[in-house]
Amino acid sequence: MLLGAVTLVNMVRWTYVRPLLLGSLLANGILFMRFYTASDGYHSYDGVLTRWTAGSVSDAQKVIVGRKILALDMPEVKKHEVLRGFHRGDLSQGDLLKILKEYAVKQEDSRSLNAALSGYKRRFPDAIIIGCKKCGTTFFKRVLAQHPYIAMRPDESKFFYDADDDEKRKVYLKRAMARSFPDQITMVKEPTLLYFDDAPQFVRKVNSRAKLILLVRDPVCRLASDFFMGQRRGTIDVNVTFDELILDDKYKKKRNRLMTQSLLDERIQLWLTEFSLDRFLIIKNEDLLTSKFATILHDTERFLEIPHSFQLQRNSSTTCARNWINGSLICSPLRQSSPVCSYEERFKDVFAMLKEVFRPHVSRFESLVHRKFNWF
Image (cartoon, rainbow, N blue to C red; front, side):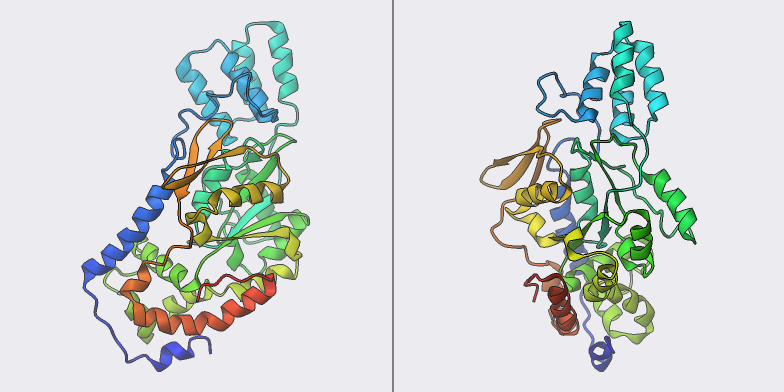
């Protein structure tokens, strides 16, 4: 029934030149590439923690231990290796104590290190980024992972669909967590979690007070972005055009899967049966690319109930949040309004048709979350 409008126009076809498709892909890719790499330190741990000095404004336990690591008399290469593992949450309390005591200059230094590492362990998550796929979740995770009061592994977690029952999922989930201190929020990102019907019940069993972060995007643009990512990863034939996928019934199975993942109303309704709306922070992907970016960071800190650790900095072209811990700049283009989906210029007719298909679903989603998104 959802795809009735698509089936009715099945005989309509467009034949765009392949370079135009590539141009569309690059236009979106370049935008987000600039967004991802606007600060130093996202893809490299050089500099992370190394600016934690005695004058740091943060009293987070992680910062205190970071300072102690910096004060140790160890080779710089070794110190960088330890800092990197510590920042990622890979090193256990025992591993850290062994390393730190080996290089501690004084006996009292060893005792203070032991006290500083109190409660450092793996925990079930306090907060989860549950989706959506192709809505900027990877970038947002990289931003939050730099916060001293957030513990989050930099790699992807596949804890849910790597297991076939809740007990195994709990084991995989705990294993996927970064080690954290008692004063930190433990977080994980699993953007496909939104699409599993039994995920809300599982998360509730693990933590009934979990905070859930949901990034959302214009459903038609999200669908197109998902399509092109599938081509890059080899899950969708590169010889199939976007309009062919939507209009030709021989691609019905793949089309239905991609379209279903854009049905926000159906997904959020399942989650709202287990969690009240106040447990959700819903972030509009398009706002990440505007002057609202830094405000989103502050809203996230308030939602997670953690100390404010970002300073704002603006110039003529960007809005940036300066991390108080490592001094890096997290930037987005300075726009007063949300950017237009560049895919729409290439596939105007298909987009217009898909908007009519998704319009009632967007309206219902807005009613469920009591917010307007103005996508169409």
